Image (spheres, rainbow, N blue to C red):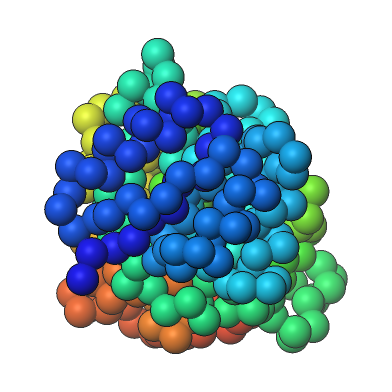
Length: 342
């Protein structure tokens, strides 16, 4: 059976572009198009699509409000389509928290091929049980957060890799961190410009300082550094202390930034003075790098299948022998703190 897709966008040109992209794959059928959420609501009832692509900003009701309503009333597999604006990026991050599966940026002069991964995302979401899409599948830990006075970082650096489903997963973990958390570096697969909004949102909602990584930034306790999307790979280097390095290079495993690149740099520079975590996501990025970390003496953790929106990257890492301990999402934050506490 083909994967039935409904396209929701107020621009006829954009609807046509999305349809043309999806129709390249015979396994996907575009069963309807809608110009606004009111049309979309009727179309969802009429054609019962497997997947909906949803524009973030539309007339009559914005995509964010519409997503919230349909996820409450009728959980649906949704991929957000967003313009590369600060407003669009911020709304998209919120949509991913509400329950959208993933996001793609609309093609632009800077990124004319932004739809290249859309077919793979459509196929991945179609294979994902609806029950995993609701934020309840990523419920943040109800365990008490340790006061800063009870947590003393032991000097180890934490490296986290995530992809599809990572927005809510990272928020779940970082919301357990105290202000003086272990120094943490993150590569989350996300389009360029979205990571700045993501880091800003994490900074507002969590106790540590969360920033988009900049080249040369000293890596300190109480700080979390998120790799900028699309431009360069995030690595750590030793320059009189551990520092962030942004290195422009070709994509690795189809990604830039790549989790493997980050993990390999941590293995080389920090070794046993590090802890690696692989979270939900499609593909294999991070599996080999996490194995390098484990071989260097680092503790390694993988998210389990039951709480992963997509059990791709954690599965690949587990099967490769990269993961020393597999845990449900709501236990990973506490385990990181327990392992890195003096």
